[in-house]
Amino acid sequence: MAERKPIESWLTDMDGVLMHEGIPVPGADAFIKRLKESGRPFLVLTNNSMYTPRDLHARLARIGLEVPTENIWTSALATAQFLDDQRPGGTAYVIGEAGLTTALHDIGYVLSDSDPDYVVLGETRTYSFEALTRAIRLINDGARFIATNPDETGPSTEGALPATGSVAALITKATGRKPYFVGKPNPLMMRAGLNAIGAHSETSAMIGDRMDTDVRAGMEAGLETFLVLTGLTTPDEIDRYPYRPTTVVDSIADLVERV
Ligand SMILES: [Mg+2]
Image (tube, rainbow, N blue to C red):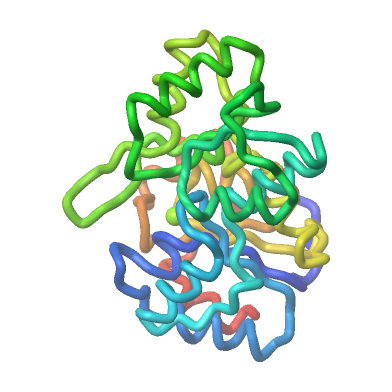
């Protein structure tokens, strides 16, 4: 394998790496502190498009993780960036929460249910039959279908929650149209994040707890990848995938000294 350059910037997944079921992973606070002291560019990533970076900053601060708002990168921000590149100043019909609507407003998009350029689907806990019907009809009438992330379920303390990917599947079934998913494992999510902090793939690393999203997206974007075992992946599962992380570590605590 080609020798990698020293790591100058870090991307890390949030759930399963820094926190797990609402509890900080031991070492996460030390890792974030070290990153901030180092002055190196870094981003904390999440595929969840429900919250704004300010919301997430507050949620992380509540469990003792002080991540500055500008160091948080969500699939909603990546989706807004994508739409701004593709069709600046466009219109969208949105099913989603403040994380997504705020990101779209911030790039100058107008939210509209009348002949929009796009139907944009994100994470929400308040799907309505009316909104889904409207989305389906707008897609049938020619609106392009975008979804923030392909996750089919999300975690909660009571069990699985249906997530964006499952609702997208419903709309696909009704329209025959598949969405373009912007979030992980699409390497666009990583590349847009790297751009946002002025980092380069050959000197960046991605830390994640999932092979099929974090490691895959990191690898495809050309990053060094670290798999942590504090989330969804068990050691015996790793070899079932056709790709490997650069390094497997027990937890984020093992990476504090690498920054
Ligand atoms: Mg995760």
